[in-house]
Image (cartoon, rainbow, N blue to C red; front, side, top):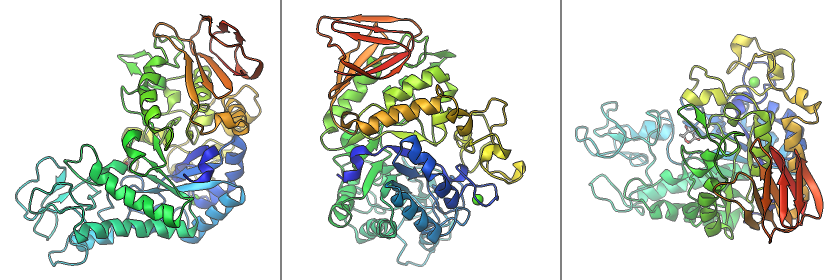
Length: 514
Ligand code: GLC
Ligand code: CA
C-alpha cells in the first residue's frame, strides 16, 4: 500500500471545466496549476484528473487516440509534467485516468487492426473471423471495415474493445489469456502506465476496471489475473504508485490488486440511497430532511463489503463524479452539510468532485462530447462573480459549457466570506480529518447506534464518537451502554452526548472525543 494513501483526500478535476488560463473557453493544465493552492487549502492533498489525452472527444476523452500524448486543448506533455511538479511541490499527489478496456476508433492500433492484411495489431482488438455471423451476447460493429470480421465494443460505438483474451475461449476467434496477442495488449498497457509514472504521475484511476476479459468471467478471475500481474509491476518498480478502480465490487477489486475501489452511484444501491433516492417524485434519501429512511439502509450493504477488505484496501466514498447527477439536485445546503460531514469522516479515501464543495448545481443541458444526462454535472467551476464566474475570459458563446448564470449561483469567493457556507463546513470537517489519525484511512469504524425506525445514528472512529441526525426533528437516543463524549470537536446544529443519552437537534452532527 503506498504510504501516502494513509491520509489522502482526493479532489476530482474534470479538466475541461476547472480553470481556463488562456481565454480559449476550455480548462487547461496551467489553469489547474493556478488553483492548486485552493485545493490544498480546502483540505485535499490528492487529485484525480479525468482523461487528458489526445482524443476525438466523443466520450469526453474516454475515447483515447494516443495514450502518450496530451490533448492540445489542455496543454503539452511538458505542461502536464509541470503540473506534476507543482503538485509535488505542495506535498500533494495526482492520479491520471487510465482507460484500459478500449481506445478510440481513431487510435492507430485500431486503424492497423482494421486492415485486411495481417499485422502486429490484427488481434489487439476483439474481432470475429467473418463479416456475417453476429457474435451473440456482445455489442459490436459490422460492415464498417475492409477486414473480414466484426469487432466488439466496450462502451460507446466509438470505443472498440481491446483484446485481453477469454477465460474459456469457445469460438475460433476467441483467444486465451495467454495468447501472445493478448499478452501483448497487457504489455502495451503496462508500457503506457510506465510512461506516465516515469513522467511523474502518482498512479491511476482505472476506467471500467472490470471490463478487460469479456464474457464467462462472472467471478472476474480472468480480469483479476491481469490486474494482479500489473500490480506486481507496480510493487516491484513503483511501490508508491496507487490504483483506484471504477468497479464498485471491492471484494473483487482489492484482491485483484487495486488499493482502492469506489463506492459508485448505482440506482437503488446503498450509496444511492444516501443522497439520490428519488422515486415517483418522492425524495426518500437518507440525508433528506423529511425522508423516513434509516442509515441502516446504507450500512447494511456498505459494512458487508468494508469488513471483507478493510485490512487490504480502501472502499472509497465520493460526493459525486462526472457520471452522476450532482447531489445538490436532490439535497439543499443544510442537507448537503450533513451528508458531506458523514462522507468525509468515513474510512478509506474520500473523493470530492470539483464544485460539490460549494454545492454547484446540476442543470439540464444539451449533450456535449457524449455526456448526455451527465453533461449538467460537467459545467465550468464557479470561482467568483467576475465574467463567466471567473472560469474563463472567453466570450460566453465560446465556453466549453455555459456557466451557471443564475443570480444566486454559488461561488468560491462568495462562500469563503460566509462562515456557515457549505465550503467552510467542508473545510472544517477536512481540517479535523487531517489532524486526527483516527479519522484517516484507518479501518476503525464501528456502528454504535442505528435502528430501522430511527433517523439518528452514532458511529465510532477509534477514540472519536460521531453523532448524526439528518431529520428535521430532534432525536433522543437512549440506551444504557452509550458512552459519554468528553470533548466536543465539531458540531453542526446542536448535539449533546451524555452517558446513556444522546440528544440530537434537528439536522445535527457532532464529533466528540470519547
Ligand atoms: C466510465 C467513465 C465514463 C465513460 C465510460 C467509458 O464509466 O467514468 O465517463 O463514459 O467509462 O469509458
Ligand atoms: Ca484553455
